[in-house]
Amino acid sequence: MPRLLSCSLALVLLLGACGNEEPEVQIPPGSDTNITADDPERAEEAVSEPASEEEAATVDPYDYFMPDGSTASFLGEGNEYASFTLRTVYLEGEHVAVYEDNGGTVALRVYRLSEDAIELVEEQVEFYEDYTATREELEALEPIRTYLTFPLESGTVIGERTVVETDATVETPFKNFEQVVVLEREGEEDSLSRSYFAEGYGEIKREYRMQEEGQEEFVVTSVLEELETE
Image (cartoon, rainbow, N blue to C red; front, side, top):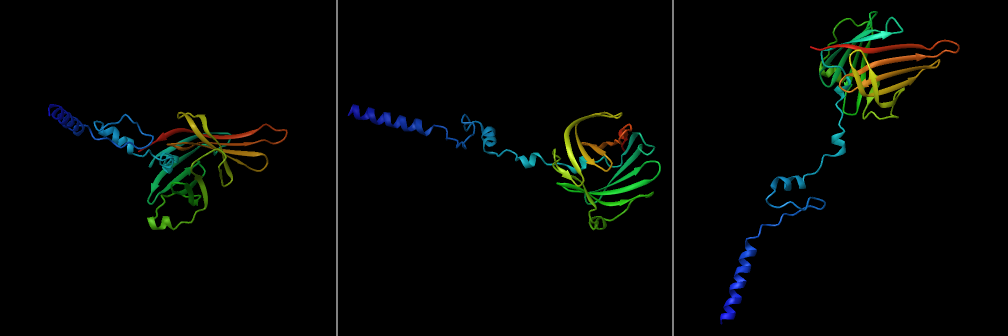
């Protein structure tokens, strides 16, 4: 009897110990196996899914324009109309109006923005007033040509232009820019046009080159010199 009582007592103690054990946390494959029920925050992190590459690579198309209500001044060399100002106004329905004044005329361009592209939908020269249009009128405008497509990667062809660089360094009187995107277009008579875009500002430099046989290369540049914001 004493031996039987001893065995029964041992069994009771063993069951009691098992009943006091902490519940096991189910760990998904590939997670940190050191997580216990005492680490609820880490356990929650373990089962959460990481952000997808598509979400991380989302582009804000407004980053490729100057700020709303701003006026940017460009310093030009090589041509009397190379210096100009850009006045930028954000419109309804993901549209942006840009007024370019080169001292000889004012050109209006209206762009429509989306996650994967920016399209030119209105263009007028000799435009000396503020452009007004309702949301419905803006949305009814037909695309004229594609201005930019996203993501901007080397080798991407956008109309007649090709992305030739995405990490250029550009010095301007306003500031020095890094990770600048360069678009290039080859024209007639051995001419070459380049547009330089910096995220958060849009176009910060223009360059035109033409080389005629037996003559010095003809170069026209326009670079961002000043930016006034409201």
